[in-house]
Length: 153
Image 1: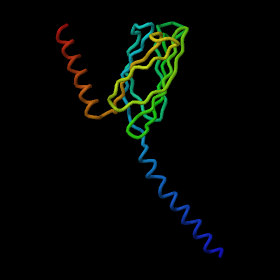
Image 2 (image 1 turned 90 degrees about the vertical axis):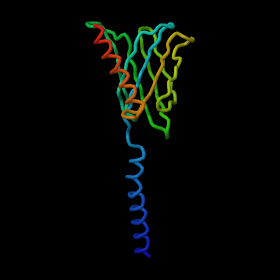
Image 3 (image 1 turned 120 degrees about the horizontal axis):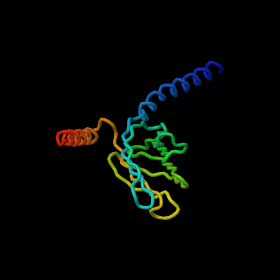
C-alpha cells in the first residue's frame, strides 16, 4: 500500500511541475509603450511618453531643477488580463492626488477622471505593445515629423 501512495504522490508532483513552465510562458511580461496626457482644471500640464513592462510598476515624475517637490508624480501599474491590460493609475500633483484603475486594449485611447469633480484632475492614456505593427507605424510617424522639423530649421 505504501508503494502505491508514494507513486501517486510522485505522479501528482510531476504533473504540477510540468504545467508550471507552460503557465509562465502564457503570462510572460510584454514591453509596453504609454502615451500619456495629464490635465488639471481642463488644461494639459504634462505629456510623458513612457516604456514599461506588464507586471511591473512604472513611475515617472517631473521636477524643476532645484525644486523640493515634483510638479507631478505618475505611477502606472500594468497587468495583462487576456487580450486586455488592467492599468492602475496614481497621479499626484501639488495639493491633489487621484487614483483609479482602467482596462485597455492594445492601441486603445481612454480618458480617466481622477479628481473630486469633473475636469479637476484627469489623464488620457494610450497603450501599445512594443514592436507591434501599430507601434512601428507610430515610431515611423514620429521620425518623419522630427525629420521635417529639422529640415525647416
